[in-house]
Length: 287
Image (cartoon, rainbow, N blue to C red; front, side):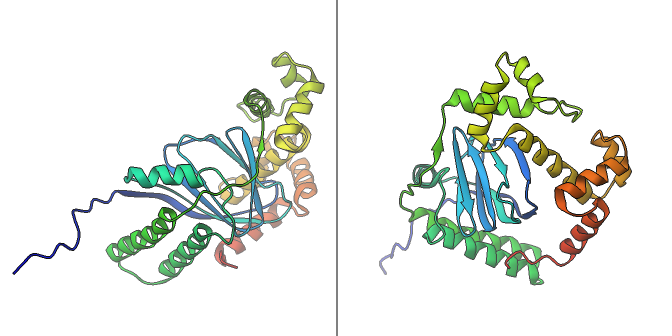
């Protein structure tokens, strides 16, 4: 009987890491980072402003972005609305596919009606259903791989995505990032923008103009958002008392911290902490 060739040797090398849902208040910020993996971010509610290299892009609900390896990126919620997104890091061993992802999809806003964004939403929904089912660990692992391979098929069929983005001279982006990081000392003490500019041997006027041009907000607004984001993070962790958090953030007293936090969020730190506990208990990430 003649042998019928069905397929040749197949070698598959995929790597999935750190898949999670993220829910954030306005003024959320994630500091600049870069890593050796691809990162998919699929926004479900609100919008996230991302600085990638020398470009600024806004990813809105339904849209997604694939950040390529070694690309510096920094994320903000400037929209004033709640932000929800799904994120995971991945890598693939297939060099042709990796090149295709970088060339066609890397660091651009992928439209909500595109095959890739639709596949990302299907991946999220499949993972949620799997998490709710009582599935044995080995089966769960293989099903996650199947879901991801379906997503890879969509990536392999992708066409180049062209979107507009605000591009800036690299020297201006680097300067703005140094000014932003200089606003806070290592012990989280707030520095004045005038002092930060003096340290960089530039005028406050020039520094302010470059900062607003790159980040889209003033240094004062940026610093307020960073402090608000850190305060919310410390309250969400729940390990320290509100008094301890006030001291950690260099407020003179718990009362002054509570007053400032209420101006930021419209609620007291204790009320915010209770809200977060309720939301963690009853989270529905696909609403």
